[in-house]
Structures are given as C-alpha cells and as structure tokens.
Amino acid sequence: MRIRSSAFAALALAVCLAGCVHTSKEAAWQPLFNGQDLTGWVQRGGNAKFHVTDGLIVGTSVPNTGNTFLCTERTYRNFILELEVLQNPEINSGIQFRSLWFPEPKTYRDGDREIKVPAGRVHGYQCELDPTPRKWTGGIYEEGRRGWLVPLSGKTEAQAAYKLNEWNRIRIECDGDQLRTFVNDVPCAELVDNWTGEGFVGLQVHGVGNRTEPMEIRWRNLRIRELLEQP
Image 1 (tube, rainbow, N blue to C red):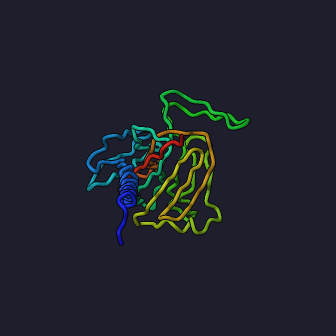
Image 2 (cartoon, one colour; image 1 turned 120 degrees about the vertical axis):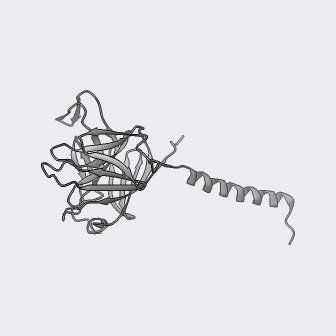
Image 3 (cartoon, rainbow, N blue to C red; image 1 turned 90 degrees about the vertical axis):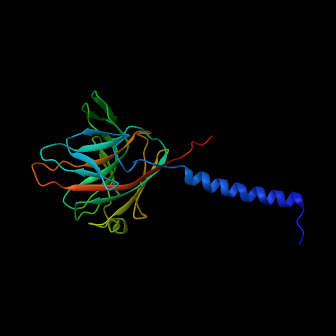
C-alpha cells in the first residue's frame, strides 16, 4: 500500500514527538544524592551522625540529642519524590518535605491558636516512618508545628504496606495544595493543605533519649521530578 508523502511525514512527526515526550519525561527525574558524598545537603537540628557508605546515606543515632535532619540545600515546590529506606525497627524516623528552618524564632497562627517555633527548629510536612505496632508509616505528620495531620488509624491496607527489616519504597507527591504519600506503591495519606508551598527535603534521625547503642537508618535511590507550573 502506498502512503502519500504528506501522510508519511505526519506519521513520522507523530512518532518523533511521542519519543521526545517520553525522553523529556524521563529526563525530568533528578538524583538528590550523588552516591559519593553529602554535597547539596546540610545537617540541621540535633547531633546525630550522617555519612555515606556503599552508595547509601546512613544516619546513626546519638544519645541525648534532639531530632536531627539531613536537609537539601535547595527548596522544592511541586514535585514527585521517590526513595528507598531501610530502618532499624527500634528508632523512629521520617522524610521531611516542603519543610522550613529559620535562624530566628517564628510564630504561626492556626485559628485561635498561636504556634511558636524556636530558632533553628526544623518544621514542616513529614512522611512518617513508624516501626512501632501502630504502623503509621506513610501518614503525614507536621514536625515542629501542628502535629498529626493524616494519621493512618483504621487504614489497614496502608498500615500493612511497610515491611520491617526490608528496603521500602516511599513516594511523596506535592502538587499545589494536594499532598499524597505511597509506601511500596500502596496509597497511604492524602491531604489538601496550603500552609507551606515550598521547602526543603529532609531525612530524619529521631532523638533516642539516653540510649547509647547506635541505631541506623539507611536511604538509597533518592530522586525527584519537579512538576511544571500550569500556564
């Protein structure tokens, strides 16, 4: 069967565009971690330790210090964030997103309630990593400000998604005021909230009181895809 040149050209253009769209979509993913050192990251909060080994970011607990965060130097607005985490089941953790830090105290209002955030306190949205029998991993907690926003009470499928002593895939989506979390591809939390439209990503090592045995949290395959603003 003969195909007219104009039709053939149109078909070729369509195939090319389809390929370009696919390439552009994949190219939009950017690594957050270079696999070698902590370039592009800054530690805030407590004195827990962070280091790189075998292409992983490793956070290690330290006694008698507060929550500690390894934070991206860059801030992000609308994005999809994906990473994998392996967590010691004896320590709590979380992934900060659209989070903030200021060298001076800040005051926020939540209706009639006044919330005071001390200088140097990391605060903002957190995808919870909860190894306790409560199983709220994937819930949305607001560190340093309003507390629990989307707990996972009664969400049995979401509560069963996180596997202790295994690598787990976490996905966080922020698009305008719509926030979503997924654990191992299982939808966990969904929230519409406009308190913070932009901020950094952070990896938490929770405070452990006076416990002296070091406990580790490991992260790998951290990548982010920023979403284009609608015209």
